[in-house]
Length: 216
Image (cartoon, rainbow, N blue to C red):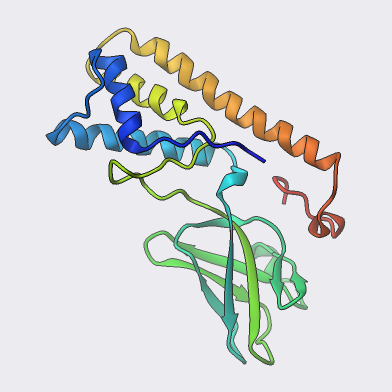
């Protein structure tokens, strides 16, 4: 299991202030707004660099009889395993494969503005419970008490410090750029290592069925 060192947005901003100004103070006004934007840019850089296991969630919803589509959470990024219709695994196909395929399969589509949806190839003959494991997108850190869901929030501090210093033309930004890059590489490497250890241990039912996390 990936360990999380919980830090709030306030904690991160104060550490950035220590790095940049030498004092642990949260900025105010336009500067506060700009710093929060930089923190969230780093947050999404991390989540988009790979598929963090700590952001996997499970969504359950019922498709009514004769239905072919259900909405997905706005935080949806992509499926994280087989979608189950009641107790049956339903394979996912991309839109191109779906044009030439028959039988039961699912596809998904949508966007962050209009929402995401799941489609099934054939109308269901009765109400069906869909269980959807999915990789989620993190929620923006918007208040000082917001908690960053990331194994090592020091990456957010380093990357934000880099960007603030670069904007101020402080040459020390290079030091924090290197530090942030190394922290991100370590986060990815630790996740890969955890996946390898998991693959050598107990396999889940989905893995027995041919699905491997991080590959499908």
